[in-house]
Image 1 (cartoon, rainbow, N blue to C red):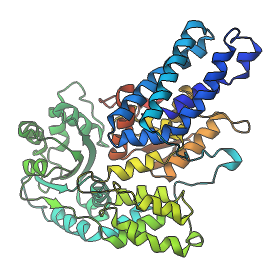
Image 2: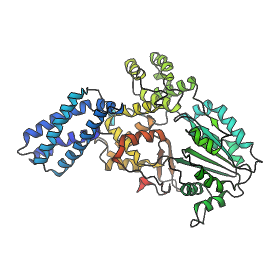
Image 3: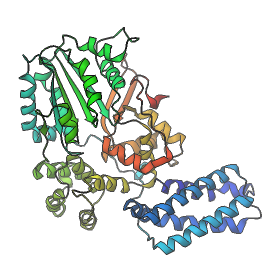
Length: 489
């Protein structure tokens, strides 16, 4: 729950000078004074309460849910400039919440300080190119799979090669490296790539595959499976199906029925976390992806934690070895943890991160590390990132439109020296530098005039956003065309 920014907004409204200037609080001065005193007390412990809720403390979770309800109602009351009985009821609710807060033993925990304007630390989201590390760390696996794909040239049957591994291990990155390999690009006549995710709707997938093709189609009125069959017919193609979860054999066979009309040597390269999914698609071609060696994990952490060679204190560098072991060989965990450490400058802060018992384990996987990176954000950035839950997984987000969404929802703090758009760009750059966004690309229109920045979110980071928002948003599961993006509506 991203509740801190909501309470901060309420505190700011309660402290607005206009309330006194227009005598809005006339007759309720005492209640107004109490409210302005109580809200900061709640904000002092909000980070601790959110961490307790994250640790599945049901009491803390229920308390935060009640606080959210009261904060929403209070914000609406202040927007109306009509107080009276409503404010008295809200004040009673807040008094009850503070009593519960003391009973739960919630403690003050310093929040990360938001940085704006001149105090904003200059950050760039292209500090390192993780693909360069990925190319070296997965070179052996890439060569093995490329050899398999190219070796099927005379095979008349459709070949399926699943890449299997835990979340955050680098399956998608490896698939991209294989797809972009010059030998692969030259060998196949048709190259296609889609993200499948949770929903395996056969017709929707067939349509997505057709639309992923550079070849124009004029048979949009025909059934999607027929269009797919026509597209691949006689073509030696490679299709990358990323993040597959389907365990329904019938659905896969239906899709495969159209795919198998390709030319000799056609292959489907899939990624999945589930061995059972791989066995359904191709039990004899499964490629199990192992964890990365610690030396590569260490390299990723150092690249993210230190922005340049000049800023590598020996005492912190020596701690990287131990911290790398906590990442369980996951490059995503190393990237997220390194991004958190980049904002810490003292040995004590690094030790505090390293000593967390729930940082990563076989039972929890890397989600605690990803949640740690979220919890380390200033409160307004938490809400900005959490809003991204409204986008489907693997969606191409227009950054300018995303910033407008943040502004429309009053998530961006006002600052005298900067416009909201400028502050929004700072927030995006900071989130990007902390690895919350990936595949950041800039493109221009055909005249080279209009520049547009787009980005995506890793599917596991999307899971974090969804867990934060819970029932507060509706996700568009059916992806619109990338040309008509959800963010641009």
